[in-house]
Figure 1: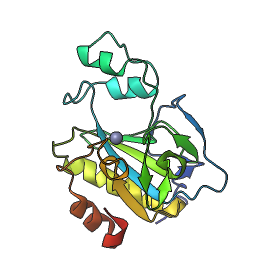
Figure 2 (figure 1 turned 135 degrees about the vertical axis):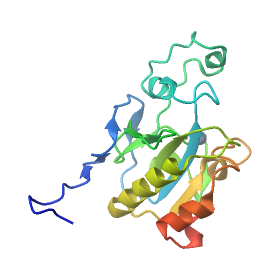
Figure 3 (figure 1 turned 180 degrees about the horizontal axis):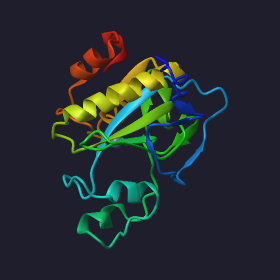
Length: 193
Ligand SMILES: [Zn+2]
């Protein structure tokens, strides 16, 4: 609702959500013409894996990660990836790529009868680890974000990276509570994996 002092601010600035901490990534490109952006892909990530609270993910998505800073980083040296959003353990929301552009989070993938899910999906990374659980603040931030996305894009599906790249990816994993997300969003079960 608008306050007595004026109208509530429009939540979106083009494809950027105003409430998110904005850190532009160079890792993106245009979406195909007429892309139907109807899929939200949920991921989990932490760098190094299982260590929370650092700045490694933001560094990775902006090509600033020091590959020599940890032995694990050798496995991903030179990787150029991004996602539209990142939700920290405390619910803090970051955005790296405009939702109108194509982020590089899905890789080889297939879902709802279409290949190359990067073309027409929104990628959301949760700070976490496949197999670990997620924080209530993350579910709330994720639900709020999904509602904002549903208001701007014709979202009809939400799935995990594990569902769009089965056998290749495992995130967000069995510790992610899809039923809780469905309850928070009030969407029918056919929208979920
Ligand atoms: Zn993933």
